[in-house]
Length: 416
Image 1 (tube, rainbow, N blue to C red):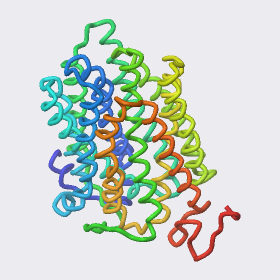
Image 2: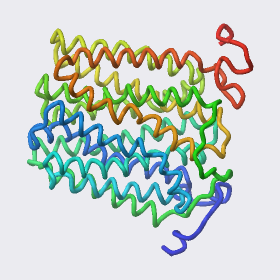
Image 3: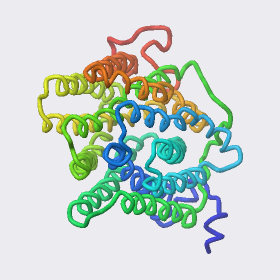
């Protein structure tokens, strides 16, 4: 029976006759659960682990995060890998690498050791995310994409919530250690990845994917949005939580509880956001996101500079995370404008573009952080402003041939 599951290749139409739990969307759900169990444990413990165990400062955390983004920058390599390996299999293998690297993290607490384990876990994470984005856009119908993507975000948030809840309870009441937490989180991802491999057939997308690099002029706005998203997000990922620990002394359980609040909010609001994107379109959703992020980043700077308080910082962190949940509007925008055969190679190229700034910014901003944390957050607000200006170029109804408000040689901003 296991051999049948491994070798069977079904089209999406044929997969419709399978039990619901073995259909393509069910596999996407299971993978959406598997990834956060390792990644959420890693991210929840990282800032406390590197400060308490590895004695990191702003410079070292900046370098660590820059190294973490190198596999994202090299995500274009997915195009070469899928020549020899099916995307679905690559996604599972990536989850296995992520789980294994997370499981052994605490055994290598030095700066050099953390660089190695971080590089491996990041390789699994970024290659999984690249393939996962491609499979989502290939397997999910365009009309249902915003709602389904919203539910997938909610599912991943629920998995993260479970992981964070176990950390909080284990840390406060049962003396959970870094070693045990990393082993449990990584091990759970490995187990679910094996189920993804053995319990599901291989699904064949209706449109064969181009297996070479694709760069098309008409996708330029999507590329630009990806670049700015990568640059802007690094400041949130690297320095927002780091500020909580360094400036306000948040302990492991406090940081983890804050993450839990984030994911509870995502569970509630992500499906709603999917419906709102369907009703109002990607343009308005992204304008709303970037306008909010400008205010959030400026407020972060005020918190650090004027000492407005830990509770306000924590509240803004939750709001910040909710705004980032709207980012899947970029995916549905691309799905509407793209040639279906370009999805896999463009997902890889977009991930690389997303990480161009991400590779160098954390290390450079680590030095700026030592001099002026306020300047770091002001820079992030400026990046959000650039993203807002780009979002204004998205038409109300994007499609192939209607990629921007300039499409067709005329500016149609008043009609939007």
